[in-house]
Length: 355
Image (cartoon, rainbow, N blue to C red; front, side, top):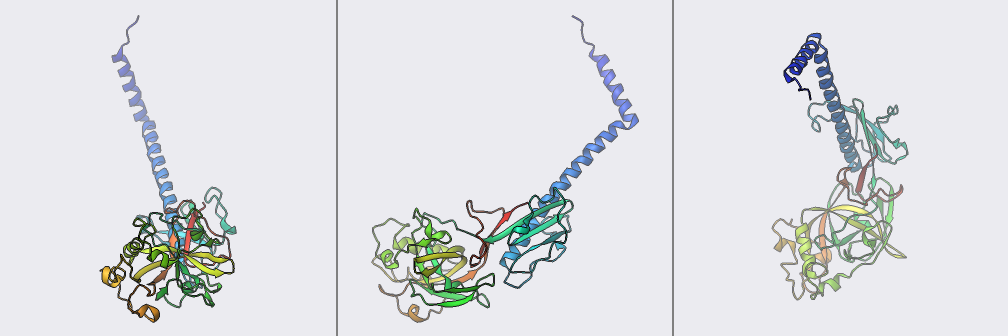
């Protein structure tokens, strides 16, 4: 069997390397590889930038008040992706002014034509394009362990005010007609007032799904409940959930009173700032009053029935601020979809990336 002469082979490789280097072929190959790497990196950077811009602008648009403006062109997004300068942004919204798209994207840039969507934004960076659409959520996620406030808020309480103001809500308040505007500027007529309690462990999910009929849980029933374990279903568990939610934005269902029952009409962002509940055999007045038991609670000037001293028969009262909440394209709750056009907008919207 002949032996291989590695020294001769090494010499041949060295000779070939010298020829390639001398002729510039090897330098060209290396340069092409490096350039291809730079191009791929720039394309990925542009795609990431376009996606970040589209989502950021869509969130601003979704939170804007009716009749306002939420985008210009070009958009400065250097803070979203250092080293870049601006992006071309356009789109469409039924309630706020958006820079209109004058030409369609080139093939391969945006995969979906969003002109059929109710609200959408398109951001273009270099040759990369991203589109997102936003709209009202058709449901919310509910914590079944009892850590979340199990309340639905009356539609009349969530009517769009002239400016954000703290509101006082009474549990199981009597219904009465009201009229106003929702966050899209559409007319709203309702009668649901105050707040109700629901069972977060219900298998029907009706109390946190749009256009469903919710069966409320009587607050007095919960107040008298002492046999259930904390936190689900017990009065002490409910008080604990309220305490942990002080000054933390949450998303809650919004209900209206219909002939068929208590209907879920939408969802709203709400920040609880204070509560004042009745006493029970196991919950003292101090524990049931955020001003006494929660150091971070705001002082609230209670009025009407809520101004009375706490007792076993006093009112269930909460105070807080309605605020718009938007769930971004990269922070979606699984299963939450955009509701059909015409759904009442109480301020909770979701974003979907479509291209």
